[in-house]
Structure formats: C-alpha cells, structure tokens
Amino acid sequence: MKKILVSIIVPTYNSEEFIAACLKSITSQTYKPLELIVVDNNSYDKTKQIAKRFTRFVYNRGPERSAQRNYGAKKAHGEYVLFIDSDMVLTKNVVRDCVREISRKRPKRFAVTIPEESFGVGFWARAKRLERQLLLGVDWLEAPRFFSKKTFLEFKGYDENNTGTEDYDLPQRIKTKYGEEAIGRIAAFIRHNEGKLSLLKTMKKKFYYASHLDAYTQKAENKKYYSRQASLLARYKLFFSKPGQLFSDPVLGIGMLFLKTAEFGAGGLGLLLAKIRPKK
Image 1 (tube, one colour):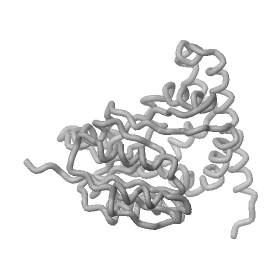
Image 2 (cartoon, helix red, strand yellow):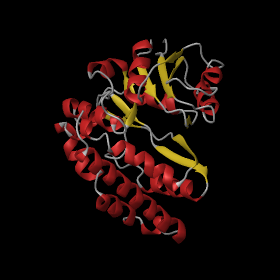
Image 3 (cartoon, one colour):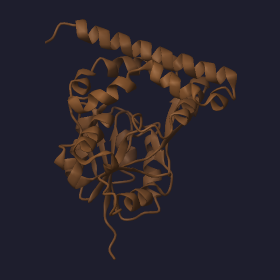
Image 4 (cartoon, helix red, strand yellow):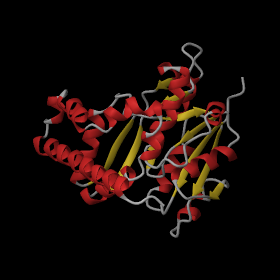
C-alpha cells in the first residue's frame, strides 16, 4: 500500500543558528515520503543558503508567521501538513505517529497535537523547561501542528491578522465544528530550543503578542479558552497541583514562577497600551 505524502512547512526569519538542526531532524524522520518546504521572511543572514542544502522548496513570504504558514500550505502537495518553527527539532517518530493517529477511523481525527519540551542555555531556559513539564497535557495550553490539508484549507488556515495566538485559534475553530475529539495527540516530542533565553527577551515577546490580541479575543469560539489562558491564577493552580515537581529544585521553581509572573505583567502592559493606542 502506497504511503501518504506529508508536507512539513517551516517558517523562518534570521534562523541560521537553529535551522540546520531543525531541517536535519525532518529529513531524519522514520516516516517517508516527506516534502520539506521552507518559507523565509526576508532573512539577511544565511538562513536561505542553509535551507537550500536540505530542500529545493525555499520561498520568500511575509509579513508574519501565519502568512508564511498559509503560503507554504498552498505550495504543499501532501495530504497532510505539519508546521514547525525553525528553533524546533522533531524526535524521530513524530511524523509516523501523527499519520497513525490522524488515520484512526473512530473517533475521526482532523488534527494532531505533538507535546513539546524545552531545552536551552542558562537559568531562564531551565525555568522554561520546567514550566513546559508542569503544563504537559493541558489541552487548553497545547495546540496541534499536524493537520489534514483538506481540513486546514476548509478553515482557510491560520488567521493572518492573528499574531502569537494563531496556534490556538485554528484548532478551536475546528473543535467548534467537529467537537473536542477532532484533535488527537501523540506521545513523541518536539524539542524547542530556547537558546540563551533572557528574562527581557521573553517579556518583550509576550508584550508584542499581547498587543495583537484583538484578532483572537473577538472570536466567540476563543472566549472560553481565553478566560483560562489569560489567567495567571489558572496557571498557578496548575503549577501548585504538582508541588513535588515544582519545588524539586526550589530555586528553579521560584525562578519559574517569577518568569511566568513577569511574562503576564509584560503581556498585560502590551494589552493595555493596545487598547488606549489611537486606531489607525
């Protein structure tokens, strides 16, 4: 029986530090056949040159990640599409397990969530790793990256007005129509390279994303999820539900709580300034 083609789409921007490891993890998958598509956003480093060592399908598109992903999906020939970021690496059986999960007859699957774990350099990267470990399996904080292309196109892909929360928006639209069981999950991990993470860097990221939240929060299907996703109390309840894991290293545990609080503070400031900023 002929295997189904899977298209893997990687949006990039000045990703030369991470891109080779990312693409190597794709070409090393146990599942074949694969189509690798890189969609770059006007990088001025060596991202494109490195990408062309792994695939001839290297395109240029912007302005944000959602637009890059959607463009890649339009170029894809696969029956299934997988979206990963350039600072991620796939463990070897990710694609194989996703295909098996989405091929299930009952319940019918339209997308698949892949759990993530973080790694990186320094204290704050270790704190981020701990956070991800504590939140593993929380469905309203995880989002699928693997889709039936037919379903992806049915929902017109990622909302290109949405920046930072597009990963949540698309599957919540899918679940609104097809139910909670429309999204499956596998055990194989994506590993997310945080690099040398700094407190200021992660706060800036949350500030930027929060300043673009309107496109996410104004949709009815996102509101019930947003009430928990935007709650620091809800996160703390999850963290403290596993005290042994949280405080196995007390300094790291306290640092992670401080990191999350700082991120929420930066996000709150970004949201506030977006609301009072004059509309163009």
